[in-house]
Image (tube, rainbow, N blue to C red; front, side, top):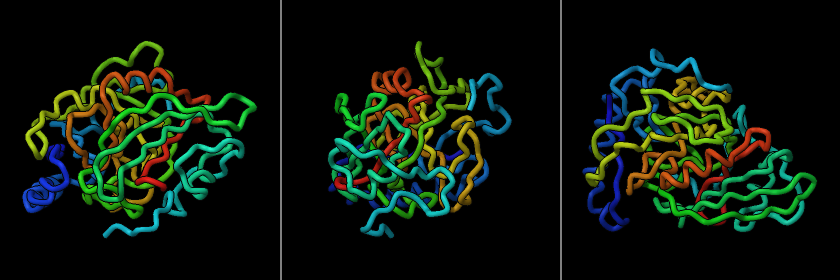
Length: 278
């Protein structure tokens, strides 16, 4: 299978290495069948076809400058935000795409359209209140080439948008108190190294699927792509490996464990992700 290719270099270094990155990305994508591991989020590396190893114990269910949330036909796009004290740093259009029944919103804000560095804040609101309260701020990585509102398979950009968070999984057992349906599965494996040589081992110890071009209520390993393979898929929150991703959002292991204990399907959590002022 293809490797989960990443980079930890600053932008200037990444620019000097653009030919190497592009070559590796091309060889990775050409060598990987779309049906096996649609890896626009990351090349979710495994020596085994995930379809044949799906756990039966899961608990349930180039860059345009004007961002949009998701294709209009997207079945998992999220409409109609509540009023009240709004989440800061979001455009009115993004706020309106937060579902009215959501009480947990994970906001991922990139430095700019082409940056692979992000900050993450989980906002919550009490039942009956429209006032959003922020939690801690965490550092994160997004895709090596930044963001796009027209994500395509292998473009090395993270998809801008508002997407539900309904399913989780990982190589390790779920942290005590995990509320999202969790598929513990040996196919959550990231072998080899990233573009700059950082080890990828452990990157998929914990995973939360971002409902970009996927079927909600399935394992993050599920291969269904409702918008077609060309739009990519396999976009996850996962454990950081000290380098940018191919489309996913990566956070430190402690943060991933905290999110798994905190995100609650009864509170309809969503992720709002994009560059600053999206």
